[in-house]
Image (tube, rainbow, N blue to C red; front, side, top):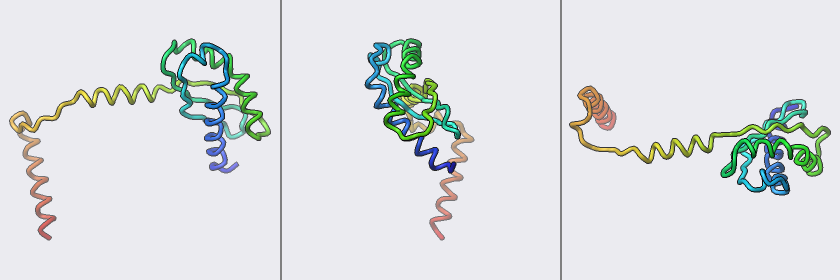
Length: 140
């Protein structure tokens, strides 16, 4: 199977699971804001790792709720996607959104000062050398 087909299946699987999660009646899943961040289907289409991030609620309870609802979600996927085999779903928490928010918060806390006295001497020398090289290039 060509790689681009698997990529299309991954994208479609991600969209369909995001829609199917809205219909889950389990309070552990319906009470939390869950975002499907990715899907990775094996080449034989028998298994799929579904990456999600959740805001609000207990992370362990959300994971258990998704695991309990995986049969229902798999049935919804079988009805909406035309695949010979509907993959068995495994939910994996994706912490990249939280990590990105943490990095963003750290970057917001950084203050930049233009005080040359606080910069070490060797950095000043390198900066001056780079500025001289830029002037040489602009003269040509």
